[in-house]
Length: 135
Ligand SMILES: [Zn+2]
Image (tube, rainbow, N blue to C red; front, side, top):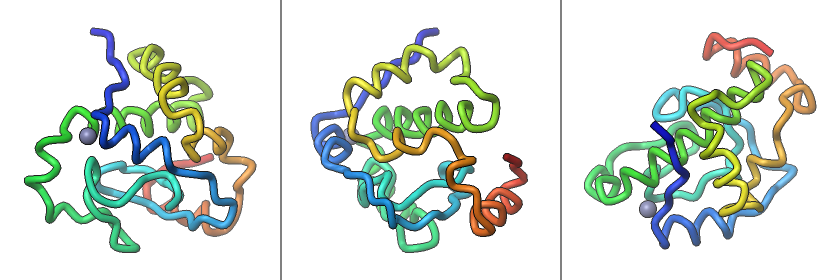
């Protein structure tokens, strides 16, 4: 099955408007990402629901239902980048989605962070430890 990068118009606008912030805070997300991320990489509100400073809350669940496909695309985008980080390549099932995402949201701040070694720090290692991941 080929997996495509699909965002509704509203989510597309949100993601296209995100800009890289070199001072953005690094954090980790168990749910829904199960990965590390920087706070400039995702808007608040759908498709992910709100980030409260520590975690994405799922309280607006009904809003999220309308954006299930968007949400899946964003989680897969995160997984594709994690593949680059930890396995050195985008997972096979996401090799179509990855360039589609780069075309649709070229300014996504996450595309500026393709190599975790550039960000090596105590903070990064602590986040990775908590998630059971290693550089
Ligand atoms: Zn959406």
